Amino acid sequence: EIVMTQSPATLSVSPGERATLSCRASQSVSSNLAWYQQKPGQTPRLLIYEASTRATGIPARFSGSGSGTEFTLTISSLQSEDFAVYYCQQYNNWPPHTFGQGTKLEIK
Amino acid sequence: EVQLVQSGAEVKKPGESLKISCKGSGYSFTNYWIGWVRQMPGKGLEWMGIIFPDDSDTRYSPTFQGQVTMSADKSISTAYLQWSSLKPSDTAMYYCARQKSNYRDWFDPWGQGTLVTVSS
Image 1: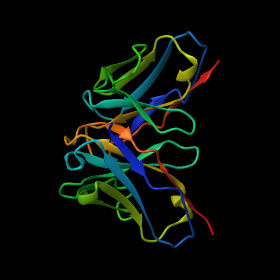
Image 2: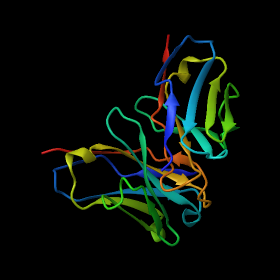
Image 3: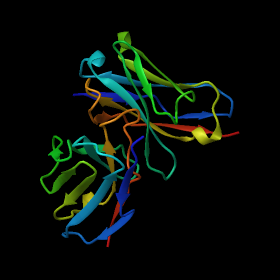
Image 4: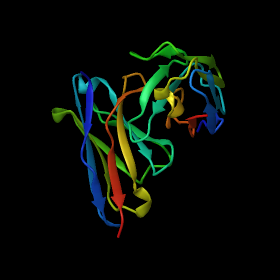
């Protein structure tokens, strides 16, 4: 089973600043990685797939990069609605298509 | 519009059985996998397993193998997750989500979630 490790667990950033979230896989997952956003009390929402492709309707301030074992989600200029928990998921090997444990992005 | 609509919240006692549902609409239900994800209170997302409704091909995470059963009725575009004997540790929100027919694909969209509470 591939283990996905996200860092940091909590990230405190001021509105308007850049946020960088990391995700590491225990073995190569090629570019088969997705990022999801979950706000409190809400369903997870797909942000990024194939490591760097934005899902439909996702603002350009969200970008993903990386391949193999190291991945990054960058939010270029944080808006109030971006404060949430972010999860990465590998879908290269199954079962399971494992999730990371999440990074909570909070207002500084 | 593609939608997954899940059944409502459940409150059960330990040892009881339960079957929750996820109904797809707005797309060809038999051409996509339906996955299930657990989120325990205050915790992260856990991939439980996935079913292909056209032929009921099912893959379980080792963590959940033998603990739950996934099924689907393609005639009514509905997937199911069931337990034969619930435990308090099954208390969680359960999401269904759609995945394309390729096994290397992501989840999109997700259902609204079904909250299962198991307590004596």
